[in-house]
Image 1 (cartoon, helix red, strand yellow):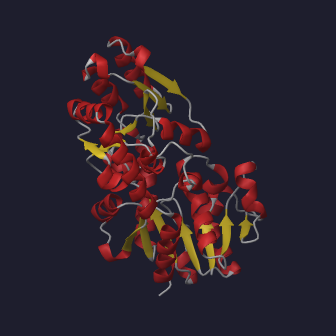
Image 2 (cartoon, rainbow, N blue to C red):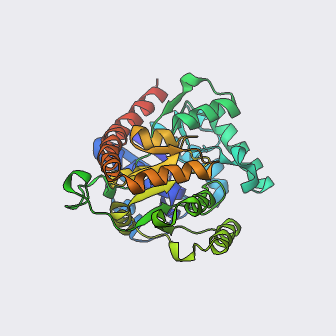
Image 3 (cartoon, rainbow, N blue to C red):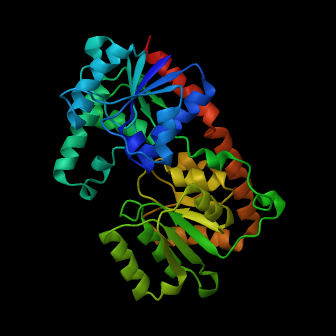
Length: 373
């Protein structure tokens, strides 16, 4: 099968959407070795992460070579390229599709990650919201099949864009392959895991992610239960709001800020943390929750949005609007070693079974085949 992919973010984005693009190629290519990928991108940022896709025998990189360039080519030129290349199905990996694919009879699939610009509009500029809405609406109307990355996102697509349920398939996101590897000795609960003295938060520091709720919960804990929090991520105005709260409540010695790091270092941080805390108000999926569970780390997350799906039955779930509830869940894990061990072991088992790359690759291929019927 020849699969065409919108590969702009695969070659030029090194966070969420770029990681999703690369892992999609990796898992489908591994599970279905006869597949060929045509990667359509207006440009390539050459580095160790992207160069391997330039050299893989199953990957064919297609860039503009005529008068049409950049975003114009990506929107208006890819359809003709796909017809020329004999593409069997085209997958828009990040919420949008090129214009005109239906004119050439090319089946299309689009992945919708979230509609946060509608659920948290104040985080986005007005003109950005308008552009996103136009792209999402066009893709949802014209795609043969829609992939939602969670049941929560599926319901949002149905709600905001009036899409029939039968047109949407839920396929969860794969995480970096490193997290599926066997953990080092001594990190799993049944091996008597000895945790270090920190809680962990990983993600952007913005109002939707609710780090302020975490530090408010910390201030409610008794002094003998307060545990250092390592924050891996960065932000702007909202981060300053969180830092002001930390200072005003004497929590400075308890909060350590770190910049985003590579997955090897992240996995170590997850694996040795006392717990992972992520009480976000809204997520399309919630990858850090899955990364934590695959790393054998017990999780406190939210009871809303897609996060109950990501954490499954073996994560503690709190009301993100209630620092008191978040503090209660933190207290449970800090004081109960048996509970920590149970969530570490069973959470990893749940994540491995639910989000294993082979499972997700087969689900993706099923969607591709459905789009061609």
